Amino acid sequence: MSEVSIRMVRKCALFVDFDNIYRKLEETDSAVANTFAEKPAGWLRCFENSAHDPHEDAPERQILIRRCYLNPMFGKYRNRFTMAGFQTIDCPPLTGRGKNSTDISMSLDIVEALYHKTRFDEFIILSADSDFTPVLLRLREHDRLTAIFSDNNTVKALRAAATFVFNSDLFVKKARVANQSAAPHSGEEAKPQQQPKPQQQPKPQQQPKPQQQPKPQQQPKPQQQPKPQQQPKPQQTPKPQQTPKPQQTPKPQQPPKPQQQPKPQDLEALRQRILNFMEDEIATVNEPMPGSQLAESITNRFGSVVRETKWLGAGSLSKLVKSGERDGLAAVRNLVFDPRRHGPVAETEHASSDNMAGLSRDLADFIEKLVAVGWPKSLGPTQIDVIIRETSRQIADGVTERKPLSTAVRDAIRGHAANGRLPPQLVIGHANINFMLHNMTKNGTVFGESCSTEDELRLQLYKTLLHMIVNRIGPLTPKSKALISELLSIAPAPASEVRSRLELSP
Image (cartoon, rainbow, N blue to C red):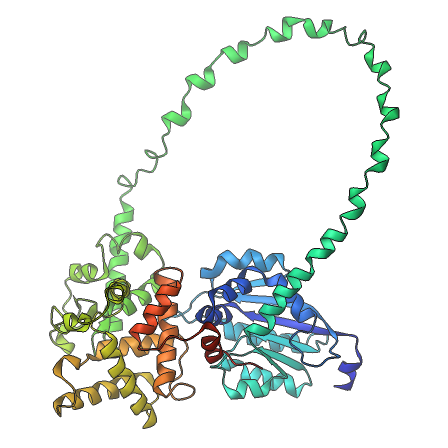
């Protein structure tokens, strides 16, 4: 440590988990997330100026390695990081649930940089993923400084293993200050350009007398020779116009897709493969699977051609299931199941109309939008409240794994209804409970570790819905955030208070 502190400039390596940071910032403030994604050069200067180091005499940082790991779905920001001197590494999803290899790729590169011939004094890791805890411990063993991003859900072990811990306010606000401080420099450099005095002496330029002698200019006789001008014959020969090649090859007629009939055969082969994949997926579950969950797995496995062809011409996932005419596949509402194992599923949800009763028109319309992107219609505010309360009880009893937790919540709710403590319309199906808990887990929720109370569960479900809306509907608006709070029975709070609940100051 003494050798590092003596140096005037500290050599650093910066590794950015783009997906992790962007989504966590998006959950709290979309403007902050956009600043992070679109202006990396601004907050990069903050690290170079040691804004994350609380010591007053902190030395400047020289960031020699700059690497950004991102999902190709965020490819529109790649050029921003490239222009800021970053090396960008694509980390596409590798599983049906969208899990990519960012954490593994970053860990391997960090360990490789640890043994680089350039001895890096500090490693800055822009990620709040607890999987990096062993890496931080290894860096500390080798007497290296470390800095990590932290929010309210960052585990204590990760923060304890780091030398410096910073949150979004620290580097985003500093980045804005750095952008403002860069403006006067450009204005000061413009002063010497405003002195055009040496250019105001045009006297030697006002002597055009030799130019006024038009005699040499009056000799355009070689130019008046119309012979070269009389040669417009190649222009009069409209051969290129008479050969309407672009007209003879009309692009809409060139792609004879209906004539090339191997593509329907390829689609049929792909259709059979997808049906086989669905049967394998349904065989692994004990309850009907939400269609949105299965659709996402299919898209991740077979690519965008599924949606581009509108489910291979079927029009929807449920119609594709029904067109397969397989004994082990059936679809009702937003559920796909095996009728031989899961039994019959009702064609309509009897409680859905009751769930909408008493709701404001705006909230009812908002739920309909969520239903269009996969949200179960039977999950209204009352049903969500029942699931959250029972989930909190089961976590307190030690059930923290998602699948056993979903089953325990279902059985407990059925027991309450059998004993008369819940009305029959509040008996919630296992598929809907599993849908909610599955999407929370997919969004990073760890049941029991930092999410056990009812307030913590509501907050995590709030983040999950934000993520779903951003990915499937569009940008967030203040009205949509307020409607999510109403749906989850969360009292509205000032933006500063919400941010303090979601982020942790270092």
